[in-house]
Length: 214
Image 1 (cartoon, helix red, strand yellow):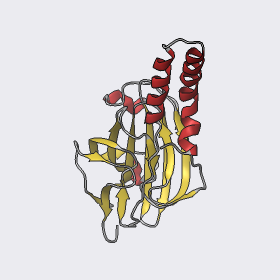
Image 2 (cartoon, helix red, strand yellow; image 1 turned 90 degrees about the vertical axis):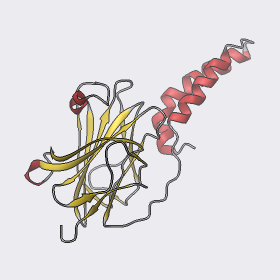
Image 3 (tube, one colour; image 1 turned 180 degrees about the horizontal axis):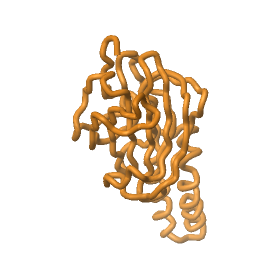
Image 4 (spheres, one colour; image 1 turned 60 degrees about the vertical axis):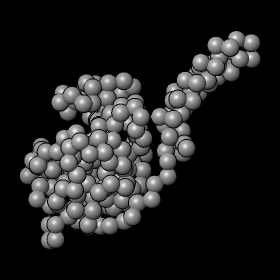
């Protein structure tokens, strides 16, 4: 299933092979089926299945589907107090849904796009890739989502901007063709509920639970 958000992001890739395949088939060339199949596979990448998040203000939810590859208890993050945060990194392969969702409810107070390299998203050097950072301020504090581009298309679609309000599980954007999504929260504010090697789903899997009084 595609939505208006994922269609806008994916049509530049889906339509050309579909049109080419249709023209080839109309001219009697069976090779057009190859282009049709390519278009269908691309549309699967841009799928956006419906999700229902059970809102719990004590929880920080996954922002992406994929594999938790790294957890840092004290990672550098300029938008956090003392510029340090707990970082949970999720790697998205080509089979994952690539729609990113808000991990918490709140208001977007800072948004920026940063240029950089295009290392494979699994490599440590991907920390310096082109990326989009979003700060969401909610009742329990600040959460930062970092959408990190990968090696292939290197494009990030942002669907929210500074000043917007979001609920936990709302769509916030999409990274094209392989990527990494980081969720950061203040050090000491929450207890982790996931570990490296665990698979998570955006808006469904809780990453952490806020501590009372944090």
